[in-house]
Amino acid sequence: MRFYIKQHAYYCGIDLHARSMYLCVLDQAGTVVLHRNIPAEPAALLAAIATFRPDVVIAVECTFTWYWLADLCADENIPFVLGHALYMRAIHGAKAKNDRIDAHKIAALVRGGNFPLAHVYPKARRATRDLLRRRLRLVRRRSELNVHVQNTTSQYNLPALPKRLAYRCNRDGIAERFLDPSARKSVELDLALMDVYDRMILDVERHILHAAKEHDGDALYRLQSVPGIGKILALTIHYEVGDIARFPTVQDFASYARLVKPSKESAGRVHGHGGQKIGNAHLKWSFSEAAVLFLRDNPAGQKLLARYERKHGKPKALSILAHRLGRAVYTILKRKTVFDMQTFIAS
Image (cartoon, rainbow, N blue to C red; front, top):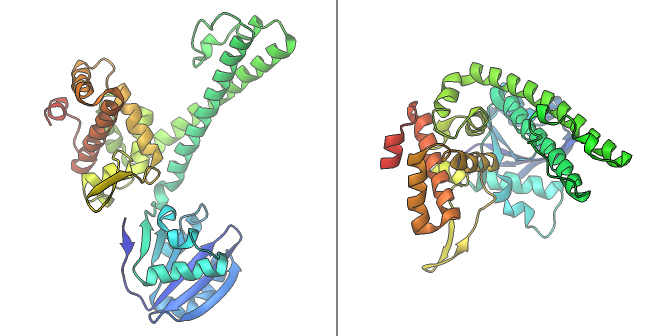
């Protein structure tokens, strides 16, 4: 956890909503110099803080509406900090809670050096990262349609599907297997939607790949040098990591990617593990998938996994392999090199 510890003459805490925001400005002594509810508009915000512009920092909790505020502060050269929502217990655990109280607490946290920081993702790549996440939701919806066709097949006790429906060429004649007109219509609807999703996903992938080559195509190719990391996993890692320099050590990167389990310790005793939802879920998924794909047609990788299995069992062995792949990716991005299997196995 990182905190914002810089000193300013004024500290502006904002409880931000989609159409409105509540401002609280504190001076260095902690005195409230402004309490105001204003529309969520750039002109209204700049007018409200005009008196404090020479030395003010704006702090806001990480909600879905922070993009425009971060961009406005960057354009106006106003210091902006984003609060990590899961760490801001002083707000969520309060007995009384409203916009006025929340804005004051945010300002007080940043003034006291206790404001937990979240990463402000750069504007240039932000939309592409969000589009990549949107693609993942489209893929999951297509998978739901696939599962529904298979469940309907089992529901009517029909023979198992001969081929995988993930490929468009294998969907011919599937609906005709159902004699009931309504059941056939339901399956036809699933297959038609799958065709639509196929075209949409392919178009999105082409757009993202073109954008990635413009942003940093070399990093994308270096990531694909790792066995098991293909185009989609490389794109996900590339955009979810962003600037690798924001992770001072490989331990920081592994923690952000949810590849380690932080222990809860008190008085020399460990009381389980926590923080399982703190970190980047998309990186966790990417490295978990990469660990499984790493073993495909890879005798050296399979031998390494077998060594882990003898000591830890298969589930934990895969987690260890995912952790090691995460460390390897950190080295690749940090040193701008490619994957070396011999070094990976020897380490």
